[in-house]
Image (cartoon, rainbow over all chains, first blue to last red; front, top):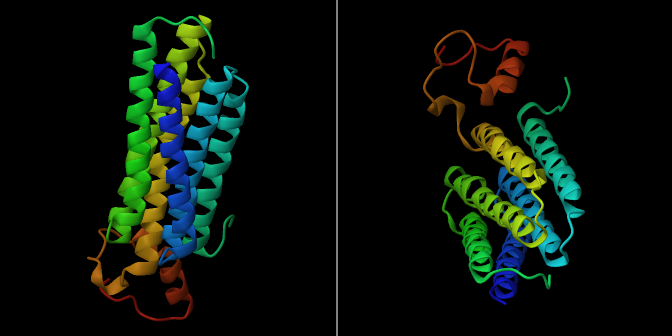
Length: 90
Length: 135
């Protein structure tokens, strides 16, 4: 019972965070801020996916979480590197 | 859900979940609220990463308590996120230096190489045959 309420609260928190990040992606003043907002969106999405795994009671979503974590990290580094060097692989 | 869990087990998992949710919300709110790009780096890379770590620990405890199985997937995700968050922050700080800070304002580096954030500028400057300021 307590756990159900805690799950609802945490999912709400991360969903609200995701909306804030989306707003930030749209309205950020510079490109690094947009990259940072996208990176935060990936992290928040991993949290929501793990929470959904707890709600459903399955461990299927952890593989998806690992994949999304890796793709998010690589894409953030690629964006930042493109900003720094104007090129990703030199 | 619908498994038999003792009350203290539910409370333990719930405490981790609520703390994680608050940290995640604070991280995302800090991204909106903090005044300049370098301070804005702090909120998502620290608070949100800690929030996800809390969710993953809660998930691990839940599967131990409810199913009686210890899973190390969560530990892997936590480790990966905690390793990659500082690298991301470092790269974004360099990108911020590159775009928002004037090259003449930073102190000259020790040694031959320029600051990493200005390396591509330096290469262009050398290619165009200009002299390096402050070197």
